[in-house]
Image (cartoon, helix red, strand yellow):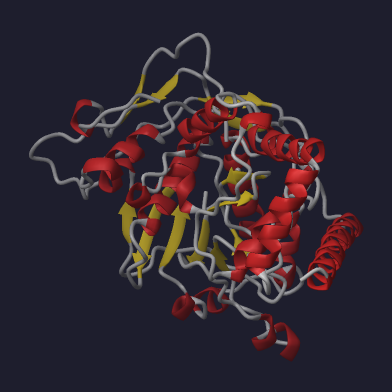
Amino acid sequence: MGHSGELGSVGWMVVSLRRAKDLIATASFFISFFLLIGVFVAFQWLDQSILASNWLRNLFRTIGSSQRYLLECPAGKDPGLCAVAPAPVVQTFRPGPACPDYFRWIHEDLRPWKRSGITREMVESGQRLSHFRLVILDGKAYVETYRRSFQTRDLFTIWGILQLLQWYPGQIPDLDLMFNCEDVPVVQTRNFGDKGLVPPPVFHYCGDDATHDVVFPDWSFWGWPEVNIKPWVPLLEDLSAGNGRIKWKDRDPTAYWRGNPGLPHRQELVKSLMPSHHFWPISADTKCPSIKFAVDWGNTHPQKAQEIGKAGSGFIMNDLKMENVYDYMFHSLTEYAKLLKYKPTIPTNAKQVCLGSMACPQRGRAQQFLNESMVKHARDEGPCALLPPDPAAIESLMTSKNESVKQVHEWEQEAWKKQKMTT
């Protein structure tokens, strides 16, 4: 993914070129936080759930491998206008292998609307909770903005969706959704489900057991310029290089946190990870003592701590690669679109968005990250096959997770008691 400080040297019109013989596999899946106390690992995806759907049994249609995308910002041309792209050449591919197990959370996120379906009124009732509305019609994206988001979250979120349209051109169904760009879940279960009401479907970066937000990959997969967090693919390369720079036994036995510690919902982002296997759980109510215990435990159990670190890093490098991020987005939006009981239309105040209209007006690091994270070609195979709903598997996972967290909490309590007795 070439680096360019000036997007004017690369182009905003979709063109056909001969594709390079070997595709470079990209590596990636909520960086809004770095966790794991010396054992903790950096990982990028704000979500409570991390996801799944049914097997794709039919042949999957996608763009041929000769299609390449370039981005240019011609001088004197209004960057807010979207050019008409040529019709893609369609080839046929079978579905890919089965999706990772964590994709099953997609079904859980959409469960509130499985029986009722989703009406236009339900979608529009979520406007007060949302920053923008996204409509996709015939492969084109339209956005109606309601309020400004923090920093460039909305810009990079929409950019990510445009990349999905490039990655699987012509395969994203028509849809209409609301999106919230804040850190805290907004669709409270107590206001809807507990009263027998159907909640508004609002997509969001995070969620928890007390909310109905539909979890979606966060903006920072495509970059977070304000804090200089690179797009996920080059960031993974940096993480991999960093892991190999210093041997485990030579590392500083200190815990580091990067993120907002005042948000308890951060803990809900690790639903796809197993405590004491991929990471060390920290108590939200007693963060500092809990972190100290984790550091002490890691220093007295270096072999086990290293195993946890390796397992967490392996999960990120293998299960959270960028192909999986796009497949998650694909299945989440496809399953959501199946629930719509109306034909989406373009809102009165919506504007079409495209590569040029989003990237060309930007400058500096924002422009650089948009360029670096841009999909350069359509994928030459179908998405992974989404597994069917399995509530029992989800329940078993949560039971194991809770038991593991409980065990760590008991160890903490015992350590604190011993400390009090000796002081």
